[in-house]
Image 1 (cartoon, helix red, strand yellow):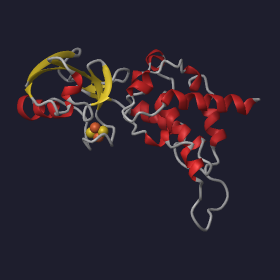
Image 2 (tube, helix red, strand yellow):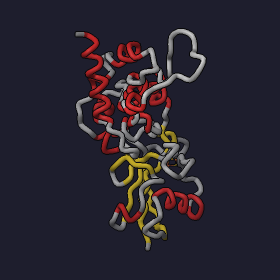
Image 3 (cartoon, protein in one colour):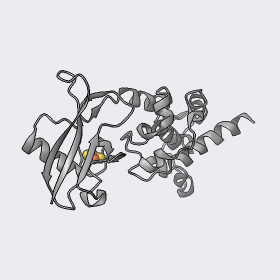
Image 4 (cartoon, rainbow, N blue to C red):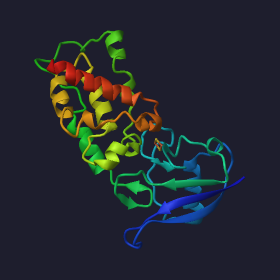
Length: 233
Ligand code: FES
C-alpha cells in the first residue's frame, strides 16, 4: 500500500518558520511510523532529521506527535492509524532544533531536579539493601519510565507554564519517594511542594494517555501530592 506521510519540517539555517512537506511512501500494514521515516530519509530526502536508537520502545528517543498524539514512532504501526495520510510533527512545547528533534535540556534539568537516584544515610550494609516484594511493588509502575517526554509535552499545564516540573519528573520522584531503601523522600517532597511542582497538575490525564509504557501517571502525581499534604498535618 501507499501512504502519504506529511512531516512538519524546520531547518533553522534555512527556514524562517516550520512548514509541511509531503512524501509518498510504499509500506505494509505492519510497518511502523519509524520504518516510514527511515524510508523517507534513505530513499527520498537524506536531510530529514529525527532521533531514534533502539527501535523497540526501550530508549525513548523517538517520541513525536503522530496524527495529533504523542507516541513513539517505533511502537505505532501503520495499521493502527488508518486513513491514507499520516501526519508527523515534533513534540509540542519544546524548542525545535531541526525537523523532529527538540531540545530536551530543560526536560532533563527538571528530571535531575528531583534527585532521581537512591540516597541513603549511614554506612552501607555488608550485604545488599533488602526489600520485601510488597514494598518493591509499591513503586513498580513508576520504574517503567523511559524518559521519552511524551507525557510532559502532552500536558496543557506544561504548555501554559513551562516552568512546571512536569509529569515525567514527578513519576521519577515517585519511584524513589516510595522506595523503603531511600532516605531522601522528605527532600524530594519539599522540591515538589514548590509552586511549579505537583500543584500545577489539573488531573487532565493527557500524560497517562500519552505514556507508551502505560504508567498510571496521574495516580502517581496524586500519590505524591497526598504524601506532601500528609507530611504537613
Ligand atoms: S527508538 Fe528507542 S524507543 Fe523508539
